[in-house]
Length: 405
Image (cartoon, rainbow, N blue to C red):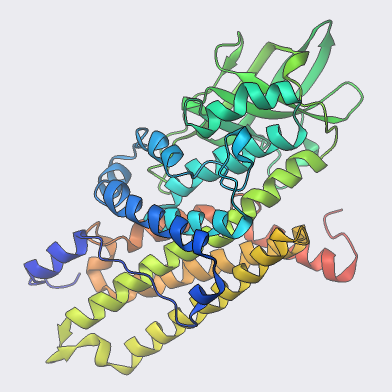
């Protein structure tokens, strides 16, 4: 452990959110004014509403539920969906920079927003009826409703096509049975977009509302990661779901996989925020912390770490900017999104680990955000497609050979 003689000044300053951003290649020049305005608004909100409380909530493993309304107010729910359906009417780069600023605060806060927008609002907008869009999307966009996304099952994670959750025809409704696992927001959600197999073997999306008999969403406890994000199960025991709640415009794995692409895109941007926060903290600490008569920033090995951090962050920023440009043109492929998600999450996790070393023993305390980011990123490395699965997606893309089967 580092000496307890660490100055009170350092401890006090560590609790202040003095983050200003780092743009080594002047990428702000590539962003439009609305991108910068959205980013600055979210950054201000994170500094005022998230940073002062997040360490306490993470320490207690509690979700700051009150932030759902704030996320809605800053336009974090479906930023790139049309305004008339509760979205922000912005482009995909705006969506990306918003996710980046949220994850700079905490991966769990970004998860709250990206699940709501990419995995709940998006499929209702993309595959739902006009009646479903009007009924659910404005309330989801305003934060009046909280949603979750049910795809992963206890025995089917990386192989979602193996799902056993199923529906059977029952006149004007379907009878839903099965279970979903590791579902962000589920214990507090008002509705769930659930994917299930029908009697013909086709994958259908259903909007399952809280309070439907047989539908429960128990919370998962004991997490060492994403501690400020609420996670649970979805359990369906003969739940009668009206046919009016079935998404009419999709009947294959194309539905949930397109939602995952949308969410993975947001993650690729988001984790840069976590990396930037770790770098920012490490840089400031290295300039303030003295050993052997001078700041540790003056030592070669510390400079090596910092130089490599900003290099990898800059590469990731360039990668996501180009991906955002392609997404705006409708050209971003699932393979390209997988490459960015995999690269950037791994980058952020490695930077968190290096930043922890620069902070010494103080790096494992909640005086600094580094250990919290590191623990969160261990989950982000796995969810929305694991590190290895994304590698195989890229492998299949470049070789044309499916290594999954």
